Image (cartoon, rainbow, N blue to C red; front, side, top):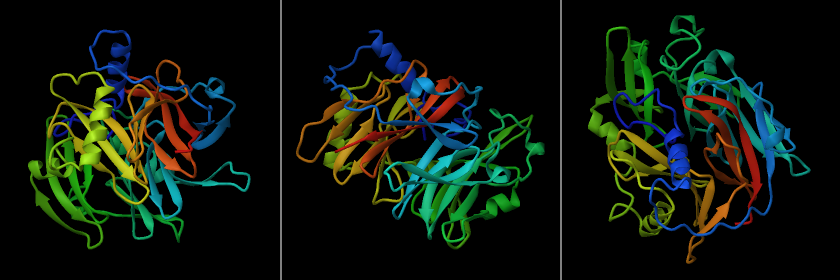
Length: 372
């Protein structure tokens, strides 16, 4: 899940990140009331910038040196869509391209090993990486509304899950029984309950109708059973950001984040997407069980220190037993936004994008020094 989306039927095709960017801009203009914000210290360093060009991360002197890129729908544009740890390796899912494994070279710089596959990833939207069984399972789907290719022109059809084997350096298809029987349906929604159990939202669209169905797919046994929409919505995460269902430390941190944000619009939800080095799956905490739109705040648990990437590009950090502090990351030009974060080898790794409603132009990552 990213910035702006509807949770539930009919939510695909909206531009993620738009709501957060709009709310931040409105708040900056003083048009929306919000709680007082803690002052942010200036960035201590600019970090190292990389831009995605021809599917690879190219180093930049700074973001001002990035090359213009033709706009394309976010569903098909080359951008870092998700990240996941597999042992000591950090995998990045590059939309439309495939997987990249990030490491350090002997001089401490970024070293990237790419695993592209145009037949699988071109014209599809990559959403989620799931480490499992010595590899990484990738969820992706074909978005008929925002695409640059017709479905009948795809080289391969009926693809929603592929698994990359780290030992074989190759991809294998992972086809649920529902998709085998219904190759024209797309797995547009995914809620992993474990490394081997996925709740899936299936969508069928043609000129006359749109339909949804829901299943729980067990990737290890290839078994699958039907479920209802309420079960799928429940699997998306804890429908609360405070109270008895949320650990007290997280609830306190979520409240500190909320104090830094504008009020949510009517019918909107605030979603905290929590990941850590130790847990292979992200956990989500939502202010509402179901909503029309959602502002997603990525959170990383670095050995007990919590970090949240706020929609306006600031970082809120809280060490155990300490008060939260706001860190100002390097400023982005107008129209650019940080989209995610992980703590990795003494650095923050921050994907960024140049966004224009449903389109993305330039995209890449910032490797930013982080002492904790």
